[in-house]
Image (cartoon, rainbow, N blue to C red; front, top):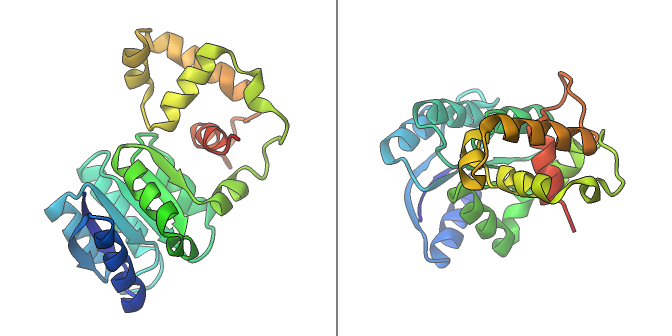
Length: 215
């Protein structure tokens, strides 16, 4: 895979580059600021990018903004966001378009090499990769019983494809069903998973995270 690494801390950036290359992938560019990140993403259009949320010049959310801007220019551009802490707003904003090819990990998780590389590969292939701590935070308001057992076989199929990052249109083509039928299945599975329609939660995100957190 061709990978861009955007991280302003030298030791972490260098460590990720060495780790990625040790697994046989290529780091085509690195960036240390928000503007550099956006330029690298649009120039190289990598198979996947690793981007720190907080970067110079303001050390706020320049990295995330650069990633979102790049995805607007190149829809579906795979990005794995790194953060020091769980920020629900950042996770929801990153995943809100439902197109897949996104991930949100805590920096401490980078030290689990296999988990980190697995997340990169999943995102590169259009999937969703979430840090367990982020999953727990986002699902904190959802019921904790055996929700997935309530789904029909067809609803399981729809949810599985949703977890791969596919849109309703793409799911309809994969399952040879109409988009209206897929819409009905998604509405039904949202209800069975106990995921309400309100301003604080993105239903599609929570449904996918429920699937990814299954036993």
